[in-house]
Length: 60
Image (cartoon, rainbow, N blue to C red; front, side, top):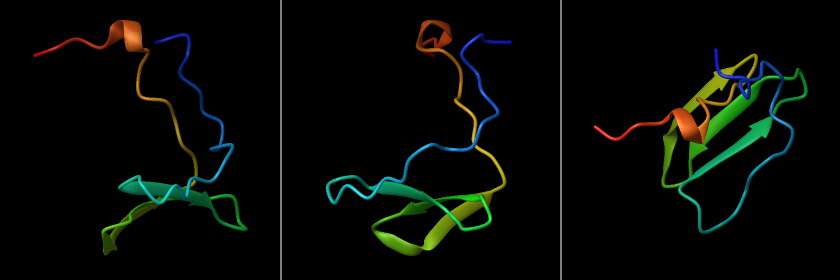
């Protein structure tokens, strides 16, 4: 397991207008990630995790 992987909720909301994807935390603590260009494209989870350390990522 990567030492930088966490099981903690996302710590901040993202709403930058130049980003295609954003996220926010609901009042119940769930994290919602959405596509700013497609209002029907979103997902909701009870927690968020970092997807691997940059040192572990490999090109195909």
